[in-house]
Image 1 (cartoon, rainbow, N blue to C red):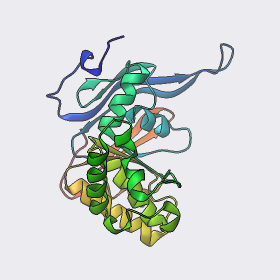
Image 2 (image 1 turned 90 degrees about the vertical axis):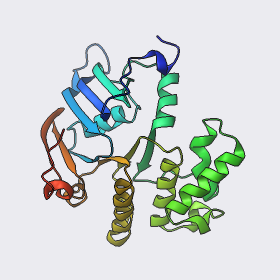
Image 3 (image 1 turned 135 degrees about the vertical axis):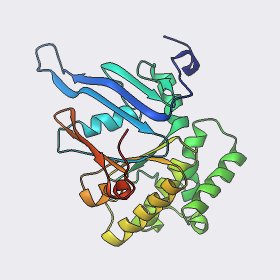
Image 4 (image 1 turned 90 degrees about the horizontal axis):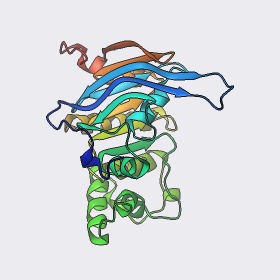
Length: 253
């Protein structure tokens, strides 16, 4: 196993920020148990700056694909190039470093640490990258200003509304200036009005050039995206234009 991510196959000239190439993901609890093929020969290439929705019924493979894209799991076979680097066979340490540098995560449940202030929550990813305290504080303040929570930095999560907590989670995802923002049902715990405000923020981030990949079951959310990748039984059922791009004649890569 190579000693660093730089030792892996790279193609920095690639136009794709994420490229999943003929990937299979197989689970088997024990030798006598049935084989579960969660992903079956999936190929998805995502250009830089694209806004993509991943959809599918329960058991379709969408969560497995999201985990692979987020470097939370590895494919059984196939390649995954993230920013031109093949991360599919990295060991845990290298994969964790790449995940911390390249990816930002937004979850349905916010996953904030209740004992920490808003600013401290946003600093957490930088803490694990050994960024000095003064730089962590400055970066967290910048990210919180971006999501319009600069006046809430000293508050605890319990003092915030659901929409404000999700904004903190988005600031935490942005603080490392990631290549991709990964969102898993980001409005699932929010009322319609608050959810729309969060989606408007996602629209702004996309307009600024950020790549966003969102798992959702809601066709209204998906139609805000440029592209919709639909999975069924571990395979891509359809790869189609979302409402945001339909009028521009966009075609998926």
